Image 1 (cartoon, one colour):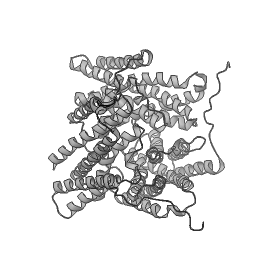
Image 2 (image 1 turned 30 degrees about the vertical axis):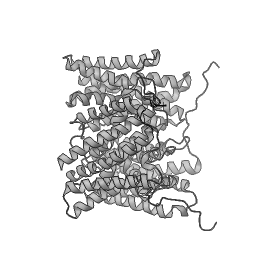
Image 3 (image 1 turned 45 degrees about the vertical axis):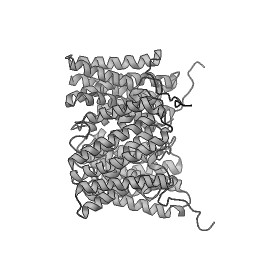
Image 4 (image 1 turned 90 degrees about the vertical axis):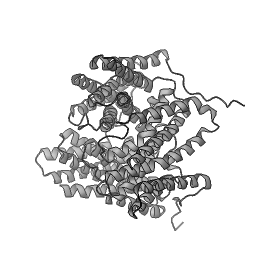
Length: 209
Length: 209
Length: 209
């Protein structure tokens, strides 16, 4: 399990960093601005999780290689983003994969911290969503997390809930966490490609008019 | 005192959750989006307070029922918000009550942490305002906390200061905390209903033109 | 070194508080609103740094005089801001000095915490930039940190990197930290006055059209 969480941490840092750098490209920042946005996106969600769980060390403080990885990803985007057709589309696809990796990372860390199932699920959602949310709020984009008519928080929640339920049913933790990530990915891609959604709130007029 | 803080925690989580869900209704989110906004608003201010005070456990991590309460409030709003005339008005009134409950909760927790009076007052303000501030920034609303010409931070500050002053004068802590909340409520409602305000900053032209 | 960090903490709180109050004046808030914005800007970056480094006490919790200093600065701006020609210009200049003081404060604290050089540099950047970033996001201004074509994060990064490099080369810590702050100031002012900048990202059309 620790090795799996380790892998998920690096994978989610890498892919979220790419999305942060893509937002930096839309803001036409300089290379250090790219690194700033990439790093904040890469570790934002996991940092909030670690602070809330009161872990002795935030996950990247004793692993500076995570920061260097995010910085490298930022430079890659700085030099190559002009080659892609639609940066907005790349951003959405990469963000979907980052979400599907960060949610199980959050669930895995929360399981090791020994908190209750409700908190485990919530930490999966927090880890998955807050890096991208900070990226979008700071970059002044409409937050992907609140995009109407798409499964986003719901995809994170569905995956985290699946993982928690499978563990409760006796499945091996590592397998449950991986399956949870798969559920998140399927829900998010299903929403993006096939238009899956839950009913959204639509105000109706009061009965008497 | 612990029982009182316990009660204030639940009450403020419930009422702030309703306001978060109302913002979610304006964003036309799905049910999980409602729960996301409701939970963030419900526990945001208290979470920041607990992180700053370096408490061993953030107040909701070992009380997942607080999260379930916020989620329940979110679903209630999802199913009933179309019945109300003006969601914006409900949001402002509920937010006033949530503020008046969260400020004394923050003061009570800070008192137990044994920090100095200046920090006690500040923790009251932080607990009262930051959940709503996060709700408004993420939901891209004009933050209520910064609404010009209304007492908002001032109501929180007045209540927290009252509680601290009463304790310094020898009053029982629980009574002081409750009276502080009452002062916050009176100031906020007085501002909303009767237009009470402090003088706001208005630039005047330099003297020689 | 502790005395130096102590001095930098107070200086950066004071100058950042002035910038927060200037944003409050643009929002036409009341005096308590000025204090709110000033305090958040004054201690925001250092608070995030201390939470990430898991320090026993956030730097201002046992030094409430820092909060009172920020509040005093807020009132000074409330009473005098109408006397200045351009509040926007004052905001930018003061912010440059605050950045140049906060970055070495962040580096100094991180050095005492004994983290690796990558994290030391990052903590310098975080301490320097996040107070102003919170000020601008909450106040709904375009974040200075992301202003295109200016050295801002880059100035913070350059100063923090200089300090870390000088220490690695054997220089006394206090001297290295002060020199790092000087580099930040020179880079930032050089950008504001002389237009220094790094190449920014500019999308070019794909090769075949």
